[in-house]
Length: 405
Image 1 (cartoon, rainbow, N blue to C red):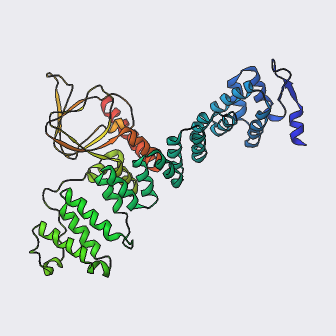
Image 2: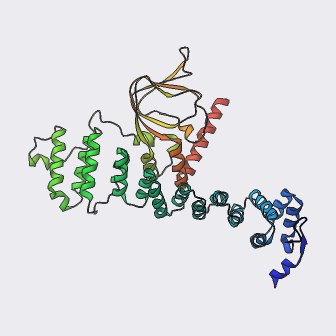
Image 3: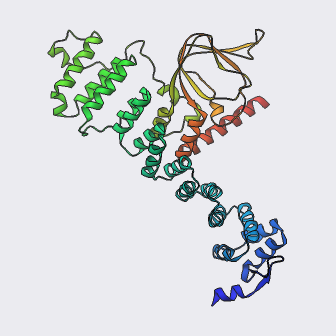
């Protein structure tokens, strides 16, 4: 038998009490280098093997002393055979190390199972989500009471009403609104979703957008056009906007589609305008928008402290901030920023100190995306991550070029 022939050429390991290592066939040079502690030589020899020969090395490793197997794990790591190294570590019960290596190999579901065995359910859930096993991820997120991650999984599973309920409990109005947009027109709870979206928009000062949304919803079917509840809400919005005397006839007229002057921005268009997000597909951008949280910063408050670690991205919706060279009275004012401007996008990707000092000169309302939330977003949106990193690298290179000239 070929396997017996390969195993027949053995040499004893020094100090191994007579145990012998497999040394036959093309893998001989790998094992010889491992035994001699010549790691670089073993790495090159392993890289030169065919896939079948590398598999033979992994199978043979089950019969070698622990010291040789540990040395082989190091060889496989350096040879970038992360999947092979993970297999060896799993056999030794080192599940945490194996899970990380499975991730490097792109085997996300195997990584998730290893994280579970290692007692790391949060990391297992994230790996399941990245690997597309959304139901498994959702189950773990529920057990961990990780509600934001639950809502994201529910959205990806096309269960928008459940996602909206979670966002509502969290107080994330704009994320709730985006989730409700995913309720299809034929859904039995479509009316409920439309009314809730109208209420959210109205609360945000976007009554005109609520009216347009409601008018469109009433055109979706004959039943929607005759729905008394939707009719009543339509009339209420018309009266609220001063566009109707409240009569049924005026309520049946077409709604204007222009935005009301002074409407409060929701930040989606501002987020869309940031250069590093310029290649994101619609659904990826919507998911990123759901990650953002609205914050209010009082007047005369330090927004970013020079030298401190960046906290993530801040997109200004209302109010202004002053950007200066430092916090002291002698600091030079560099800029004044208002609605539509953004700060801290570099800290989403690079964990370094802030280069300027920023302080609010009026009450500021903004969208914030934390570094931690953004890293989770990148981990679960691989195509989006590739596009973001490509644009980030391009923009960074362009900045370096401008500075150097």
